[in-house]
Image (tube, rainbow, N blue to C red; front, side, top):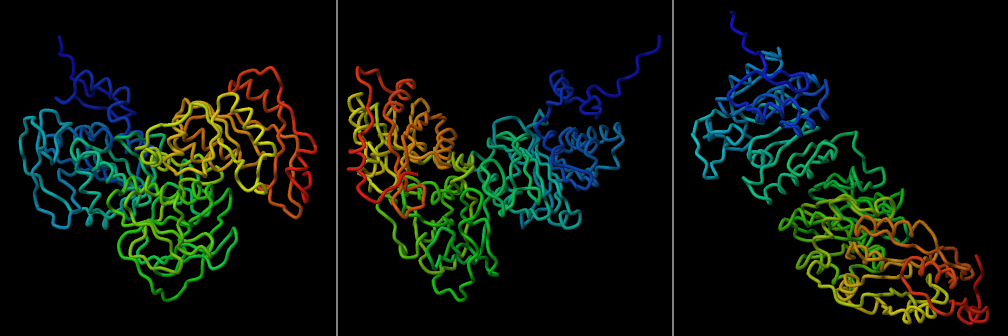
Length: 590
């Protein structure tokens, strides 16, 4: 009886046959057949590689990832490096079986980018090929072998790679620290914090972000990133997007010139120029669908110079709401670049305010960047190294905030402040200047709420820590629509219930709702219960309209929403004479 012929392959992944080897067990074979072995690297490689690409693979392992990418994406050229000499025969057998040996140049070398590259390095073999690496950092038994090295820069210059796929068991940090990423438009990289710690993984990710790469969320995890950059990404001439594009990027500008506005107005010529005098559009402040800061003129010779590394903050608003929504939007790299930034540099929103920073703003900065230098450029300045982050928050769709901005605020803002205050809270506007967007009848509303056990809170009369403590402690909150809700959204617990008494239904209401949903996980009950709106004569700005409360409708909505209990008497609207006494002369219904 003839012997059964030996199997040519024992597994298959996306058309790539895998020959037998001592490194395959039943579990690994099953995972290969299910495309789950190195599944994230394979998914990422196929997502970003096309027929025009030239691919470098570092850490070939069994050869499966590179073979799957070559067979399915068919890149123009591919070169692969594997440091473990015992893997080379098995990789070559896989290439031969799939007839791709001529399509992937395989090297048993360690590719290095460090300026002083040795001819050979030690490589530590473990029982499992998966753990073999340049680092001998744990207690597992290893065998040391010497492996030749190759120069990354020489390869980059000659091969011109566009895609890099890298799984080198911790060696990625050292490579990224020294390698030029010029020419690369995509990368797939596995991180190994067990080798270099969480700080090392953050450094890897920051290097990628600073180089303009953006994570492809669909094929990325915390430990394996697929990243891209290039013309297909959102550009700074489009509004900031909370999910993708320049809003999540960070650009470094050396010898940057920061130019403040010379005139007031919503749209101002102000921002950042590079050393050649070209405008840096990533530094513009956008509101809704347009930039409200535009390219300034080159100021010529600049007298004042700042040494070190500074973070661009953009326009510094003294208005509470716009400060929270638009002046904090670029501070998110403070979380990822700890210890590497010397200070934050703003420009004044209004030139007459020069370098003024209000006391309550310093209190916010003490929460977000304690001890860090914060300056306002009232005159043009030249900065040795300016980091220009994308706009991570603001007014418009970006009110959802980028993941980086949300993470930064969650980690820092109010993190050390304990909840303290009543469980039922009303956030009032009744002590603000009446002409600037008030609720007509708010003081009567407050008396009704006090009868329901609510504490009336005037945030402008308290310091920032007290506001945060109250917002953290409250379980039921009713608020007059206004800027204070932006702060609430940044610290409120997700179990908090919130009702908003709308002063005027506008896009601003939607931005507040978006902010609350995205940051706190709260879907507020927004109540539009107004009889009519009044506008001062000669005033056209909608934000200055006064809303007259429709008390029966407001009571019904709060009762249905579970914010108040039934009362024997219905809430009554103001008499015409009461409204006239509150308003005085000079108002019209709109």
